[in-house]
Length: 603
Ligand SMILES: [Zn+2]
Image 1: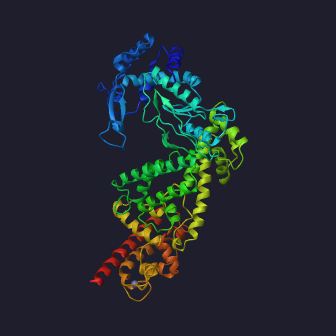
Image 2: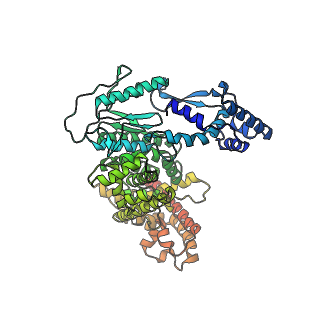
């Protein structure tokens, strides 16, 4: 917004009188627990200063409003440089300045905001996004995405809408098909920055020559000047966190690559806090950390560029690797098992969910909003083969059996109800897909899938109310290997190495597979007995059979995932958790005994 408009708004809309109630509301609205301002005052000082002080503040603020003067002393701030976590630590370029404003100014800001917002929205350009209620910064990215695909000869237009500059806060993308027109637009921007006394970052102002997909030959490089300096021609530059490049394929590749690099950095910084499977945090806590700190970075902006299968695979490979590490199962563990156990959905599902929510945001806009106009136009004008984002959304809606995009545009559901129906549809779709896929793996036979729900960890990861989560985490890690059949026994060894026999090295009689290790190997019998008796005691309370009377397969099922058989007989989760705890202890004890005995035998 320019200086003239700001002045006009402040003349027309700013209040001259504030009541005590508004001041109290303003004080309560400010976040607590923040740094002190330049005068050493924090919001807590004001909050607990008492009635007398509030009356004084009331008087003071009203005096300022009546005279329309803000004293210079409250326009100062405390500036601290914050490292951007990339680049050279000794270079000032890689620091961002964060200013702590005086508390008094924050209170005044809150009061003014109420009035100014109503005035400013009318004057704001429809291409300006960010800091605006009901639009996400990514809305600006959508517009740019559509422009790139448009390839018209009549300048950057979608239908009858002319798009020449897409802005989000201070991030501006100027688009034009004609170099002269582009130079003209850049001149306006440069002139404007001069008039308003700010500097356009020379390193960040670059030209990207987008190659139209319908023309094979690349064009001659254009020269655009900013303040008499030639602007550098770059093959990629970030706009709203998305790395824009010369073709949409390159943009997609670069952004996916960037997201993975950033996520890897985030994930490894959490490893030191214990997010690394074995000997660390318990898996359900580690998965929560992953969801909070890694997942948002990994999928950032992808709802706009909608990656193709090649890039989806890259993202998926990264996610799977981290999840397997957290669950401490080897990379060879069957893929569906990690999703079933962690409750995390494949990347494709996450992106679908985000893009459908973004579409709902556009549907809920007023008819005169640019994105909504574009949405209407593209959905009517484009055919199924189009690269338009809106046509892609149409396909996603169809995939999950949701309403058609036109219906949603005309009668948009509220954000809350839409989010809920999208989540339900996506959960349903992927739950079925995962269950079907896991059935094709013989090794996942014992992994219970009936009561899984996306977003929640499998009961196998639940640590219950143990007093020692670290020890429980170690037990869980052994058990997860056994249930995914990635715990290496002689039967596995012999499959990959001809020199190995499948015969158990403890008892030298039978083939060592899961059932031999867990139920029959006689060397481990004394350890097994103790735990199985305890499990038997619990079961006999509500079932009329003993463990040893049921088929081997069912015995294995109870030890590996008791919910599959027993949830038919009881809904009491504490009982199931107790059996789960005991079976974990059993498997861990067998694991320790097996290794100890093998060690002794070797010597
Ligand atoms: Zn044996």
